[in-house]
Length: 112
Image (cartoon, rainbow, N blue to C red; front, side, top):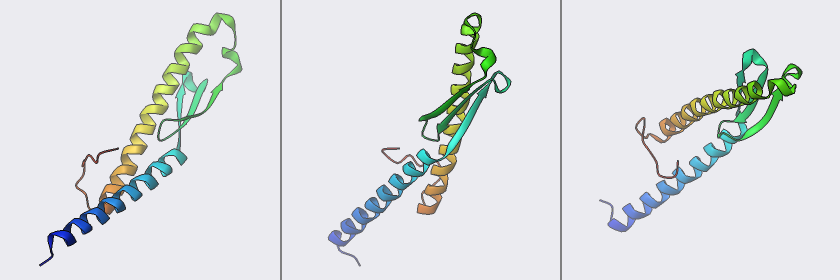
């Protein structure tokens, strides 16, 4: 039978392992890119799975003063599309990591 000290040390080691794997997962998420699209492809926004915007692409046809309001709406829609895709990829990656750690699905680890 393990002593209380041995159990505490084992728990601390497990927590350190989980924290290390969480940090690695967060780094991977920032390297995965998704693309949000609006206006049939006239506006595209690339962002990391963590939600960091990497690039914006606007079709030249939208660069007219009369189209300013439409362009603003399309940029917002493309960003929201990219953000939704980033959230999906992030959720899938975190689920994979949790399975690898033997944690139950949906387990909410502090700091995520």
